[in-house]
Image 1: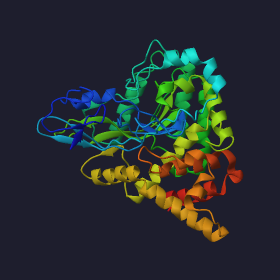
Image 2 (image 1 turned 90 degrees about the vertical axis):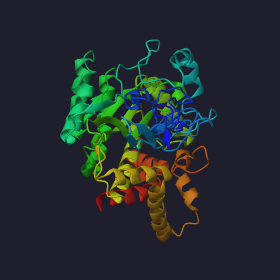
Image 3 (image 1 turned 60 degrees about the vertical axis):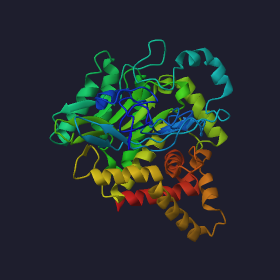
Length: 426
């Protein structure tokens, strides 16, 4: 079985074109740079990128509306990509989607009315590529999903240098002061590449404090995030920020395509991160309504994505997958194990149950597991299109709560946070 790398539709072995989107199935790796975003995100639903027609994307997003409509998926999808003659390059690229619920916006009605004309101008097709749209005010020149085929990759240094070159080549017209902030983030927090070209300098510098605070508590998890970048998005995409744990960036000259270079990214939707007023209204409404934890700020959606990142690292450690930057014959099996687990949510649920059992022992609570999770926020009980809980949202929301509120965070958040930390330290 294989799937279209653009839209995720199943491709039969005798088909030369995707019957859903029309993509030619030849030279498909080069076409991967047309993929749309799919991640674990904080967005209009506030954490994940809503997408249409179960098209796979590789991310956790923070949505503004929590749950999106039935046309969007919240499943991690494995894409099978055809490469060269007679060879099949199986790529474990997976995405988590949120369904859009128009009754539960993360921005208030007045904020929407004030920006309605701009929102309309900023709404393009859900199938938009990452290319900038000159008709929209809140856009970046940065392309987050370039893919390189047949390059020379001998080791992790080669992989990181290619990621860095791709990033730096896009900075020609970016202001020097924002480049300075980007370089500070790279140097201080071990991020391989940062692209915040059009972002307000002070805002970008404050985002760095999110990483500073988290890495002070989790110093061992540095250097696994390859990219933090703006990405062109719209209100219709329904995400504020996204975590993309594994996206194909490059394949090698070898006949097998190994090693693959895999990026682990945090994506920031330009419709919010280049419009602080809208972002502020979104997080304020989400926090006041209980959709997010109390006291959410315009910076803290990144903390939610970092919760996904830490959970992903704990899951990778559980499966004895030390790094996914380079994937080859030696680690492809563990790579797929992590992909499958991220899809099923088994390890996330395992951590939650462990935390819940500890809480029951300490308090003799009568709360059920789901009631207990729901004390964190409404978003902690997010479900996918099939009505199944997305347990890693509970992990990310508990982390977000503790990040914001410390000792005043909900008990469920603190217990889950403790288990997450223990999994990373063991």
